[in-house]
Each structure stands twice: as C-alpha cells, then as structure tokens.
Image (cartoon, rainbow, N blue to C red):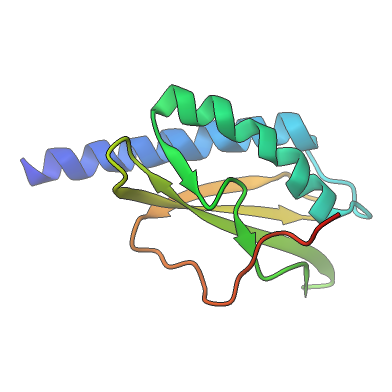
Length: 128
C-alpha cells in the first residue's frame, strides 16, 4: 500500500513539473535570450500559479515562483533559481518546487520530494 501512495505522489510531482515547465515556457519564451533580465522573467511567471493551484488543488508557499538567493554567475552565464513548497488541500507539504532560469536556455521547473529543503537565507524577489 505504501508503494502505491509513493508512486502516486511521484506521479503528481512529475505532472506538476511538466505543467509548470510548459506554462513557464509559454510565459517566458521557449528559450530565454542571453541578455535577459532574469528577475523580470521570474516576475512574469507569477500569474501561472493560480490556474495550477486550482487544477491540482494545492497551494504554493511562499507564492510561486518562490524565494531565491538572487541572480548568480555560473559557468560563464547567469542563472536564477527559485523555490517554494507545495501544500496539498489539507496544508501538508507535498513537494518542493525549484524553478531554474538560465540565460540562453529554456525555463525548467522540477518538483522534488517535500523534504528537499529550501536553502536558509533565500528571500523574495527584490522589488522592481
């Protein structure tokens, strides 16, 4: 029985990852331009949360796309990683969603198990 519930939860996380990635690509573009303002792109993703929350009967905390350590230089490029917790209809943590925006690449959203920690010190996007 536990295996069935683990598989169901994994399937829900995969479906959530796929839907958020698809919606992020529609909102931000299939591939982010190399010179893109990653914080502005992250803000443009905020409206995709409401329909996903309704469709899957869940809530993002903090609100999607979540908190971040800010734009980082990585491998000669820039990236912005954001994270939030997915809460089910009863308020229990179901997943941790990580949204990765890398200049020159498509947006990527992954839904990790709920025990995947959001790093300490991450904060909301800077006001803009």
